[in-house]
Image 1 (cartoon, each protein chain N blue to C red):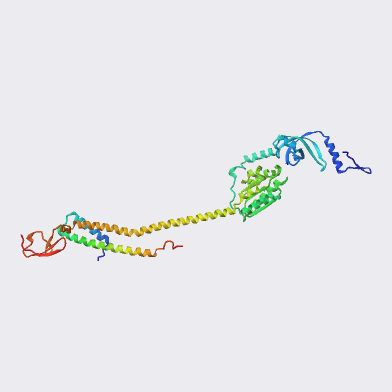
Image 2: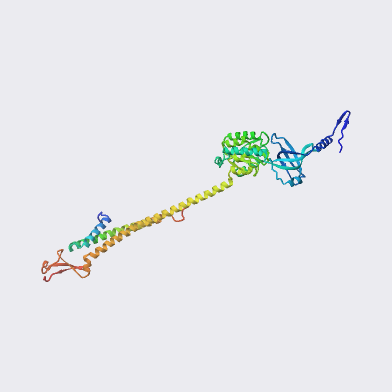
Length: 383
Length: 73
């Protein structure tokens, strides 16, 4: 297609379309080149014809849009992730409808870990060597925080998820929210400042830093050394709920607890009120059962003591009675009566036992005692 | 009746039995001891009967005021 200018007197004017076309044609004559950079904002969908990504210069952050036919991209089987450094082979191209300049990729080769990742790795090692991520540093979260501090972005999704989960689990919870920029060059400082402010607020017993999912770069502020150190120095326990399950920003490592999502963070921070109430009810039931059991046991013991008490005097009486009967038995066995029973008799004269007939004269009056009964008699003859 | 306790009477009875068992007592003494022993036995037995009666009476009164099983709230 031709590029034609419209003449206004001595002024030649191009329509947007023909200008773009002209530039496009000129760009298309440039040779193919290799360009090195870090992959960011990789966007690929099955229904799209092209795959889009932004190539970033790690030195100064300069960016270059890149497109590649989806079929070609898939055939490479690179399984690229954001932050990875690549070499892209392609030619400059202008998307004429929008005047967008970009690199039309013909091939992509993986170069290695991106500069960001390497830097992150270095920072991680440094902070780990200082012991900032050590398990001994982890503080337990309060069971019933008076107030919960939330540092989150003004993008709302993370905040909404967290607040919904908290109020659902524990309606009486009080939450202090600090909204801040969580993206862009000032994000790290903004989050750090918000964190300090919320830590200083009265009655805040735990602080949650939350952010929904995002690109590798979106989450970079949460690995910023200033923020990581601020989290470590925080006066109350901290929870990091940044990105998705597979993301591990350094905030996750330094915080006292990490949650994969804002909803999961809510579960860590407050107990489930319904569950708590149910447990309390169970405890109370057990308690009253225990008290009743003790009462029953004591009553049984008391009843036993009462029975013993009742039996004791009777038992004592019986023992005495047995001893008495025993003595009486012995008494009777030895008594003269037993002898009398065998047919002997005791003869008394004037209350004296008669042992010899010499004690008696004829006509003397004697008392004769027998086994049963006694009688008086007179002596007829003493021999 | 004397002011003597059951235990005193019982002790005296025991000592009489021992004295008789020793076989050292003369017949006159033995008869006197025996009569005394029989008297002591009557006294002790009466005391035990009285105590038994009082215990029975007390137990009956306790049974009457005992809280019925299941009557409590």
